[in-house]
Length: 171
Image (cartoon, rainbow, N blue to C red):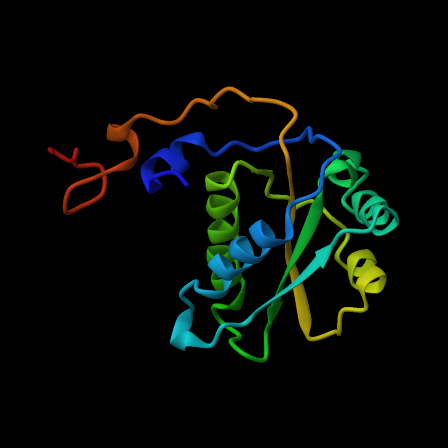
């Protein structure tokens, strides 16, 4: 597997997947990366549903505003937050865990794409998710069938400051 900085540089939002599954042993390692994520007060408010059947993937893609490429991914991981476990930070905690999934997937050669556009009630109904559980993100994951170019990023001086806002950081 790759070194962490290389993984961060290689990560892309992948929207085209080969019709191949994610190997079980890889999936287990990737999910373990999420389980090990930090959370406020170590409350671990995350829950994840792993969707692999093509019928359910199709229905999820439709619930994600018809982003049908989701259905082509080997798996869709539905990231959930238990608001009773941690009301104030539960969604942020889940997002940290999802980014662990993203980086672990990248290091094993899989592609992913953060999906935030979906009809939450449809997703809940489809997967039998209780009322108190929020759907935070959908994460398609699979063998990439594209190599997207890196998107432009803001310059270092635009985003890093020293001591106070807008004072350039000198490193």
